[in-house]
Image (cartoon, helix red, strand yellow):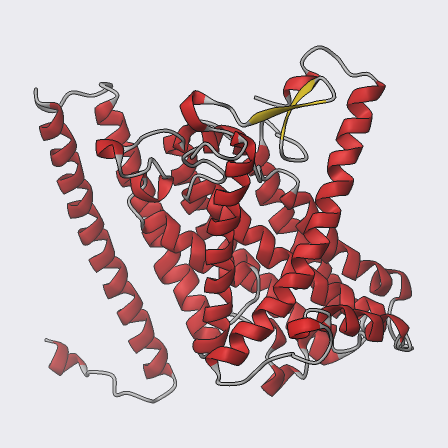
Length: 419
């Protein structure tokens, strides 16, 4: 794995190519964010029987640009009790990880007929992504963990109570859902056998079952990791129904209450950039990324971009749909979903996939027939999961009753009643 043009050393041409890809990716991502803001406003407007932006430019396309210009020229205010250096640094800590995550995503390429998605530019073979890191998925997890520091430091450095509470909520929420995100991601790595995003796309390319059903990890992993990853990813983005970091009913505006002008715009930009990036990650991990059929009348690498864009558009609409339809959770519901549902489900499903893969690899031999091996392991795994789930439910119920009894909300049975 890794960039093909770096296999034989690095010269000035390689450096120019790497810098050029980074600049182009950054420009494309900024334009995508502008269009995403317009797209969200339009879709939410239609879902709520409104027009959405329709004044600035044709169809309101320039509304995002107008908002950015307005925020850029507004007065920049720094609270007197704020830590000035950290206060100014925090927005960039939220913005930069979003772009760095996008750098590992293959956005085009011909993966049909065993292709690896590479193209030739100025005599150099390269992938249509900024960088194909051998540990790309670990890099994604590192960046998603780093982004919360921008939110945490923004709230802490503001010198105000409401932003601080919003940033503390963000930290707890990120820790809760990062575990479920990582476990669902481990299921993809288990079936793909690589940490490279390009390698994950290659593993999903080509014909699947019966020559019709694609070899997407969505199907191979059994749908459950995808559902967990989608929910946990939405919580990581702090988007509805998990936007408790910015819960205006009790926290005013959350962690960015004291921000104004261009620094507030950077948080706004980071939120939508993270939405685009998370959608691209989901497409790459579970839906084959740019891999798809080559229909022939366009260059192969361009067909990869077409399939990637169509898949990306579906998930961008999904996140907007969530925002327009789902009510915000209470904070206790948020934590219960993360710790009591998503983490146990993702861990249990990972163990099932690992057991099935172990049997099919021939490392253990329960019965002679391969199908019987797989079926027996699945039944045994689900039996263990049902027992574990029942015990966990009983423990949670007992703890809840004990907590209510301590508060005097329910009566505690006497010794005679218990006997």
